[in-house]
Image (cartoon, rainbow, N blue to C red; front, side, top):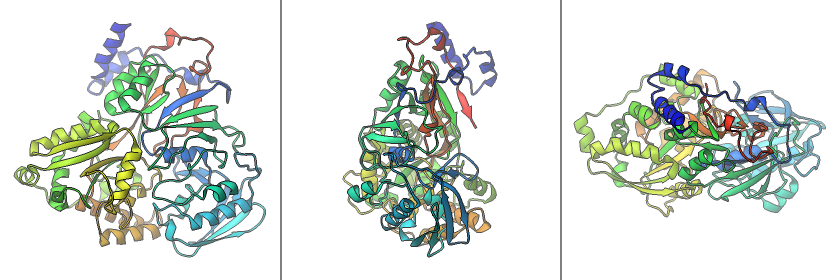
Amino acid sequence: MFKYFFLIFIIYNFLEASPDIVKKLEFREDSSALNKIKRLHPKSHINIFLPSIPYSYIAKVTNSGLIRSYDNEKTWVYDLAKNYKRLDDYTYVFTLRKNLHFQNGEKFTVDDAIYNLNYFKKNPFLYTNIDKIDYDVEKIDKYSFKIVLKQKYEMFLTDLARVYFYTKEYLEKYKPKGEETGNANKVSGAFGMGPYILQSGYALGYKQTSKLELVANPYYWDKNFPKIKRITVYTQLDMKQAVEDITKYEGKLDFVPIPFNKKNEVILSKYSKLIISKSTDNFVIFFNLINGNKKLLNQDVRVALNQALNQESLLNFVYKKEGKVSPFTASINYDIVKQIAEEYEIKEEVFTEEELHNLLKGLSLEVFTQDRFMFLLKGIEYQLKKYGVKFNYTVTRSEKDIYRELLSTNKNKNTKKWDLLVWGDDDWYYQNPWTVFFIYENGGAWAQFKKDEKMQEYINQFFETKIGTTEYKEVVKNILHHARAKAYTLRVPSLNKVIAVNKELICKPYEGGIVPLWEMEISKNHWSVRDEKEYDEKLVNPIKPRRIK
């Protein structure tokens, strides 16, 4: 068995260079989907690790709104709403499904929808422009209501996918307020309407518990979901240990987004398989232009740092070819970003090697990062050493530590000194580049520069411009090109999702920032439900990596 695994290990390292070799390998078929358990087996249970934006992922699993983000052309599906009509630029009419219930069994009515929307209006989230938009909500009949905006705002429908409905008890007792990150999981309990109930723990972005427990909601409107009874979510594990847990031990972890350089460990594991998919997620590396290294205030220095990086080399040797080069911080996998990259020329002065050396020599940068990004930073550091740049690292396991410093720097209240900060900006807005653009909004906690009136002008236009129009493409182009010219971030290639999954877990990742836990299933051979103590020896052989395009 060892010789067989060793042979697979050697050959896999040459798969990208010699794709024909893969035809000669005898991977076993993934049989998990042919052997599914019946829905909601009482012992069904999986353990997952969410190192980035767990508050957002959990919110989408435990809550429901009128619509839900989804992997389709329009990027959403109906959730609590059965249908909607947009009567004009300002007016939306929604019709609710019948027989809706909160997670505690209480009936949900059109009056509850109106109550929640009016509560949200007074306590909106702060990461779009919805906090500045006024609207009226009017009841039409037993199942329908109308929302009338008082000003033009083309992000409204997109925002609605993140407006969740709660019991009055939750709203009155816990008084959730909109923040720079999500606030949907302030406390555990059966207060929402999503497919899973948050049974213990909480996740708010800047603070969270290290473990959360989810249990299937018996009152979820779609009786096809969820399909697994219990889910344990971990938020701040050591990445090396997490990879070891899913590859070497059965039952510790069932789902882990992994660094690209850990693919072989997963493929050769007895217990895990590899799933790779196209993604609109982003790695964002901020420059601190508030109180960081003063040399970074020189725009030429920031541009030089970007030009000093060989993006193709990063993609090939650091990403292990799991991604694409993008001319912008925003993922090239956004359809609109790809269009602009192909249709518009980028005009910028290209520094000579001598100029790069003169601008960067002796530059020492304090880097704050989660441990899971060290593979990326070491690759960047290797390239920049050529120009005399030095990195000094402060490393954490938890994203909440990243948020604490990132969201306080704009007001000069950060407690750690940093010049570069790395954040896993998963695409929580779904094929809408606002996922990245919001870091450029003047005065917002996410902006790591003091003021840019031209950028703010573009962002204001973005909010008012209808998606799919010529004007929309123009304003997106302006934001992308302006952000690149100002070099507010250190650009790196766009990434693929690379996920280690238990061999008996059946799932399909979404392109954007949703982990569809309610759609996941397990086979009868999964550790949580099978009668035999040991995993069948016939199943330990490697499964060919699954690539979803």
